[in-house]
Image (tube, rainbow, N blue to C red; front, side, top):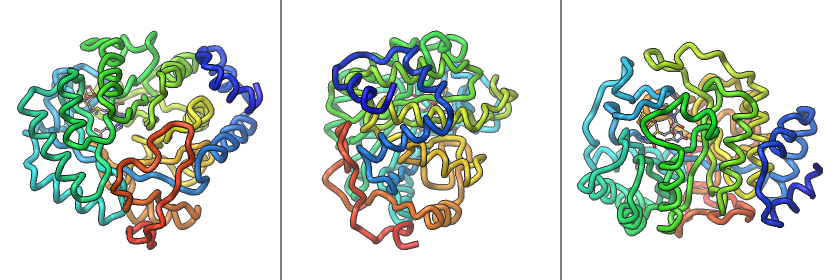
Length: 352
Ligand code: SAM
Ligand code: DTB
Ligand code: SF4
């Protein structure tokens, strides 16, 4: 399939089949990257990367059994259970993230689903972070309709809720919530008018067909998510996947490229696992169409590259951060529109 027919497929509203996505995966590596880069340049500013910083506002003690996750109470990991973080600490972390050059601030809680008083507290955090001029994102587990509406009302720009893997492989990774539960929460988020951030993990032990199955699920959401995080499994001692085999790095790059081709207007985020990636591999991921990343020295409980390392990488690759001074909401919320890097040069990264 050439790039043009990829677009035709999408415009005609036809669903992506797992087979069509597998065929993309099976292209010669250079052909796949070339196509991904073509699609990328048709829809995005080629040298601009969106920066999101993460904060764990409620760590550990989660009742779910996601077998990759160090925060599940079912596994004996080094993560200590903590209470919900006080508002002033959240504001301080958000101010630091903004000063370092982040555009979006993502707050994560290790909950199966939040209780009403917890949503009230998170709504206060959203209002405060939004007031600093940052875009807001939260990931709190499953939501009810009224909770999604309350978060929207507080100023929430994005809700992160991942499908993680294909429907076929899902049951080997998580048993305490269903795939349909996840799709239902995503529909509630969409209906509340919040932008959807939804992706998955590679390196769980899935096959290529199962990776293609994840991408098909994401690409066939109507509309597809505005933001698609692609995580590489961070193997944490004590979790059932701690001794998993590493995925071939080029297979990870292929996954980024396939996400870019099937979801041309989305922001594909090079997510967890970046700390273990050499600069050259990260550069290939950007070449394959990644245009977003987690920026800041910690993800939720595990590490991420040092700020100085990322600043040096941006300088070496002539990459620009997508600006943090747009306070009118997401820079490019709609799918299939081109991203505009902000002219604001005040961030630490832009100035480096
Ligand atoms: N508890 C909420 C939930 O699961 O919806 C939000 C937080 S959860 C940590 C968000 C996502 O982080 C997961 O869906 C998974 O994709 C990713 N994640 C968690 N642990 C990871 C790991 N060890 N390696 C890579 N990604 C991971
Ligand atoms: C996402 O897809 N990746 C982020 C974010 N959404 C919340 C989380 C990655 C977590 C990695 C393991 C940890 O730090 O605990
Ligand atoms: Fe809990 Fe989320 Fe971790 Fe699953 S991924 S165990 S729901 S914190």
